[in-house]
Image (cartoon, rainbow, N blue to C red; front, top):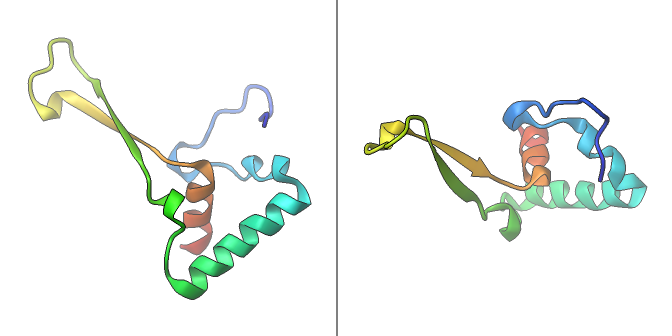
Length: 85
């Protein structure tokens, strides 16, 4: 899946450009998942798995405040959360 050249991602809000490569069948699947989440009130299991990484803000960091936490979550989960807001 390729995004347009020189296009930065838009922070945690994501970009609708990630939906374009899905095509019609992919959008149909996303629509079904979003509708299911709306009806049941439950997120798909793979949307609840998040990887958290920490990066040091300063060298020789010794306190939690010396680190930056980054949450890695599937772009589809970000997109669905944005739609369901």
